[in-house]
Image (cartoon, rainbow, N blue to C red):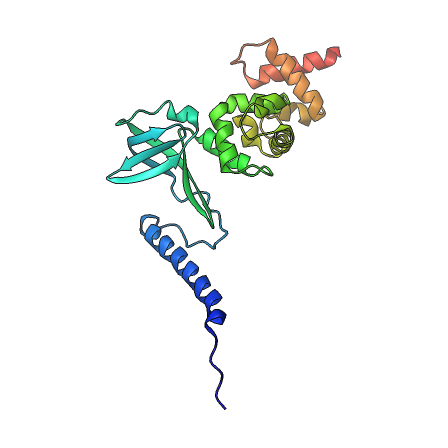
Length: 248
């Protein structure tokens, strides 16, 4: 007795799934020759850096989008509106890039400075913040303004941006502050200088070796430097710090 033939409707879902897979793979193969260092991602992969930067001529631009002519190949990039204003059509430009890939999206984002790109990537790590919201934030405020808003708990600075409500603004501030505490580079990026330690300051290291606690060494070094020239040698700063400690 032979195996009964499968019905067409039984095969349809499998065919559709295969067609979708084939289309996705063909798209990736078309892109792959121009991206030799990029492995083929899974459907849910995010590849943060497929291109380090693109250099070419601005062919077209609008509020948050530019088309960059790179040796005859046109690349469409989404950019913060603040950057668009600085770019001129037919003028050369170099844009640092971030590549965002999802099942339904393949998009390049462009930036003029590394701190803009770094902050964009960090914002993507905040719960509920996607590329559209991160781009809107960088369009509305400079890196320094964003840093000040975070450090000063300025919820209104974020709620003025379309698509960001009070809860979203509070979450951005809370999570970015947590990241500030963990990431020294981000602290510097947003204008919050990290506190010196014995590993980064020779004066503090010397004071700690002489028996000071780290907080005492920081305060004494700061007081000593206030009364000395900026180019004073470390030995003089240590002596001045010890004198200030003796008075307390």
